[in-house]
Image (tube, rainbow, N blue to C red):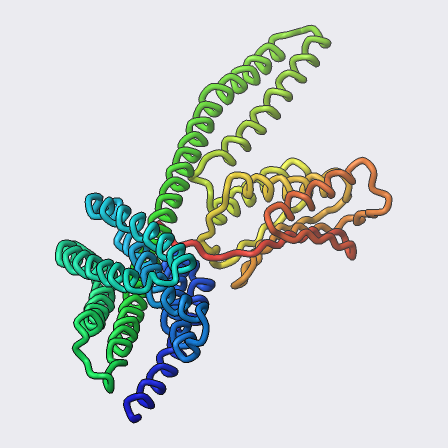
Length: 453
């Protein structure tokens, strides 16, 4: 009576454990999307059918149907569980890639066991006197599977990684405890009082397998995640290297274009301007002198534009400090022939900020447009260009004491303001226009120190 009560407790304990483990494995599959968890969940389902189902029909055993289901669950359910274990073995150990000969044997075994299950189900349903043959054939299958498991484990154990070793240890525990149960049943070694010991052995083997399976899959996922992280890091480094090479190629091309424009176009335009000046001095014909003056002026303007483009293309100028120096020089030279008194104020320290050629050109053109508006429209006597630097932004203020701008009535130069605002905002900056005593144009853009080198 005590042994029966002990088995009852053990039965419900292991059944509850299997159900909880099944839920955990399904949760893991949903969480990490590893097919090994789904395959092992199917294995647990067959184990539950073979243990819980057979226990249910054994306690009833009233009808022919109960007897048939008990035979099926004691045989086919367990064989199906082992089929799933073989599939899991293929998956976890990657037999097709690393052990092709063993993989062929596993494929034959899976096919043979599947045929056995189909025949077993058909005979159980159609032949009620099949139980004796069923018992013999089932135990023969178990012996074959035990021999296969032991020999294959001995053959490949040393060649597996740690996750594969965990799985093989679990499979070995499952098989050895199953072999013990088979020996007890086939040779009838136990008295009636201890007839439930084979069931203890089988379920203990399943629990050992589950434990080592969890360790093996967990280790495999950890290795997989480490490999994926390493691969991701390598890909990021490759992308960075590609971008760096691309940037170097762009900088090299910018330098070449800047050099070619300066050497070819710049020299050519300088010659045109010089020759037109010489011809203008030598010509006595007034219309010719006027035409030559226009040619000379156009050549000088084109040369100035080329100089600006060369400056914006040259990668050596891609710093805020260089931009500031260039704007200071340009402003002084621009106001020199106009009669407008201009002052330029620089901050004590200009941060080392890298700028692209497009950013520098957009800021330069915006400042140039503001200076042009002062000369053309403001009627100012004084102008001031101020550079202000704080920890988070860099500001350029262009101020004059002229008549101010009536933005509502701007016509001829209204597009200039629109273009200034657009260029500044394209650089992530802020454009402001104030009309008080004269006009103030304020260009502000965020900064972040760039490490030198």
